[in-house]
Length: 131
Image (cartoon, rainbow, N blue to C red; front, top):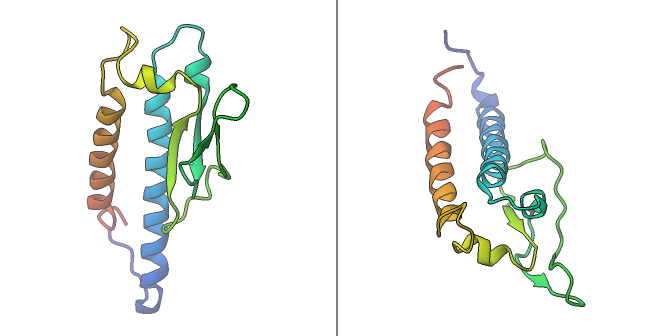
């Protein structure tokens, strides 16, 4: 049965639904990238991080692991209008993303991204149908 929404509450309802969709997609993307990461010691898999409104710029510093700039994310606080990046700052992350490991094919991250874009579309299609 459909839920009735007051005309004055439509904006809040829509924003809440979109924030919920965003929350699901961000967390599922993080989970998918981690679960499909090649594993030797587990360091690569455990080094994935989510950044909110991060610049995407990295600072190599003193030759240690790369440090993402301005990662300030708390799960459950996702809001439409913010941007989210799932990234790995290890020095060898790009090689693993490009097929260096026999455990994951070249382009596996692009495959996850395409799957999650489809998931977001599915969730968007369902907004309002189950209310």
